[in-house]
Length: 288
Image (cartoon, rainbow, N blue to C red; front, top):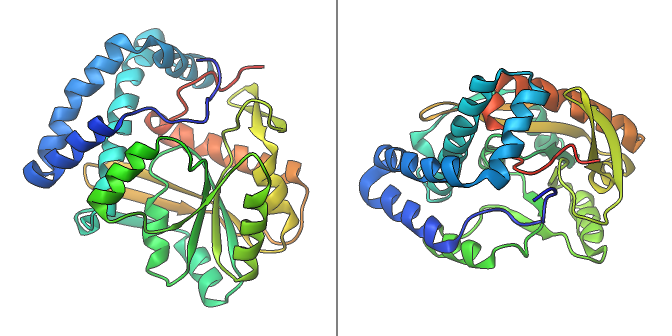
């Protein structure tokens, strides 16, 4: 696959296995079992592995052997992050240690009732931000392609009790724009991903890791339009049960989408160099 299809990989049965192991055998056993799953993808999923390899070789300038090893490590950390998401949604979040870097910026949005836009990406475990923000009392809205893999979501909702944040689904019409506007007028928090788009969508171009890439126009146009604080947020796994949450200082006022994109890409490049195994875009990200 040369471009993102709008759907994430996985199936409901696979999620059920991991949920079963986690609940009955513990997180440690589940992490151990994950190695067998990762080995299968490492050996037989070249359609995505080749793009991870290119990310290490061309983007981070790693050697051949280090890039091949990076494929396995990326799959393994990705699996751990999925398991951790289910664990957190199931109420086991107290098992995890969270280091805060800039969380006061989100706290200020909630306490000052300004609302705000949080721009993230498919790196690390961004959902820890939603757990963190619930502690501040703010309502969190996540803009996403909610039509994908409904069976998986149904399985997880039945097991974990459902999502702990409100979903604003992106559809072929522009209904999500009105829902985002309504949420911001209500002084709520809106989280948008800025690193993926589907075929036919309007895009912006920006240099990322030394090569030009395309980014979706919509998230940055929406963020630039509204006069609310805008921050970039990420959550990265730093140990077996440890995470670090990052939130940048807010960008204020109405701005040009291109300006926001440049800031976003600079921050994203800094983060992937710091946590290289937690870049989870398994397709030709730099396709012309």
